[in-house]
Amino acid sequence: MITDNKKGFLRILLMTCMAVIVIITAFVLLWWYGFFIPGWVDWKECSTDYGNGYAVVKDRSLTLYEDDRCENIFFKSPKDSFVQDVLIKDIDMDGNEELIMLVWKHGSFGEHMPFWVKKNDKALKQHIFIYRYDDNRDDRLKPVWMSSQIDYDIRSIASGINDRIIVTDTKGESNQWMWRDFGLKLAGRSIDKDISLVCAGDNLIHLSLLNKTDDPSGLYDEIREDVKNADIAVLNQETILVDDMGAVSDYPRFGSPISIGEAVADAGFDVINLANNHALDKGAYGLNTTIDFFESKGIECIGAGKCYDYNDNAASRIRYIEKEGIRVAFLGFTYGTNGQPQPDNCPHAIETYDYEKRLTFELDHARKRADAVVVYVHWGDEYETKINEKQKELANLFCEHGVDIVIGTHPHVIQEYELIKKNDHQMLVYYSLGNLISGQIREGTDIGGLARISLHKDADGQISIKDYDLKEIKAVR
Image (cartoon, rainbow, N blue to C red; front, side):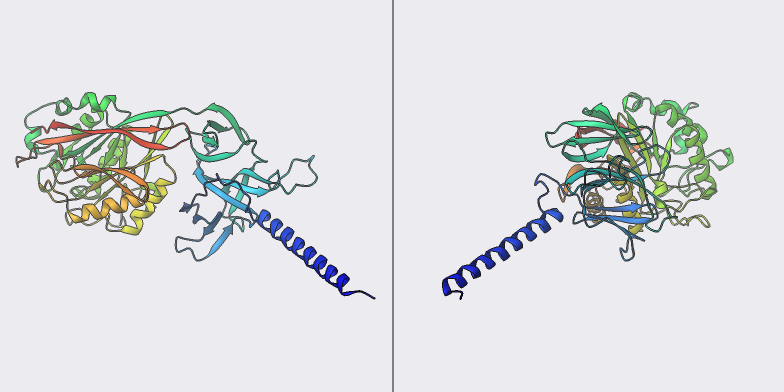
């Protein structure tokens, strides 16, 4: 017969066993669902388009949706995979972007194990998985490379030059990994790098300027050295180019001869902004002529697209230039085109900022694919040295979407410049650089500015504005 003491002991023993089972079960569940992943891990959250879908990284998982309404899911990272960071990059340089995931996952090997491994283990390890978008698959993602466990703890991944990524460990040591044949290989230490940008304002060609010279290249003598010495130089081409001398004209519908384009190219500019209110002064003809000319000189055009080869894909308007392993994205937007309609069947031949959804799409697309994002924007009130509310509103929007540098044009006079901060992101904005070249005679229009900016990329891939100033110049009249 069991005594009361024995019953009490058995009850305590049973409760103890149940408590141990609950604790062990809870411990296993917490471990399985990543509770014991090291506290130093920085879980990134972001969203961007990828392939024909929209990628969202949030709460340690990756979800791919049909579009940015985030309603229909076609891929979701497995529940036992915890996504630390995502990088979109053409890692194998084949012209197609890959999705690179830094993940924590159970098992020392990825989805495809070496032939000599019969069974994966259950250890929670860090991996790098690389996928490619493939419309022919149900899940739309094709595995390209699934690494086994990483030998050291990765704090962050960032884009490197060409086929390389920058991997930084918890000790702050950064290395370059490159794609070779099949998989990522160590390519050596990563080091700090700097590049310089020079940005100019309105290249506003009045006939009075052309009547004073037979050689327009002389118009750029004052800024030639600054432009040539910069790693990347950018200009707002206010007046459109024409190759028919009968189409050369002055205000209010400008048409500048090809010799102006030759002078701009000779001065050393690398990027031309065409998103301004005079971009359609000569309709599709002038726009096509201008882009064709600059492209023939190896100069990138932003804020506009050719009408005879029209592509309405907003991402196609972004231009990337890479120098010293720093990839910079350039975009351009304007308030309008002086009432000139967009050419037939080309609704976004000139990029305007009143289509906010398209604008933010471009910003987010560029942000995920470049180290730094530079926006040229035609805004503000002509001849006013003070910024208006729309400029402030747009500047905040740009900052919220991760733009690093904003260059303002259109007022034809110099306005202030400053650093602004939103959600721990810092952005440099020049509200107006005034005129570079002009025949205007109003007060203040004879002085322009060159924005001189130094970008720094540290060894672990983090970008910052190292230095900046505004060099005043005499706008040629």
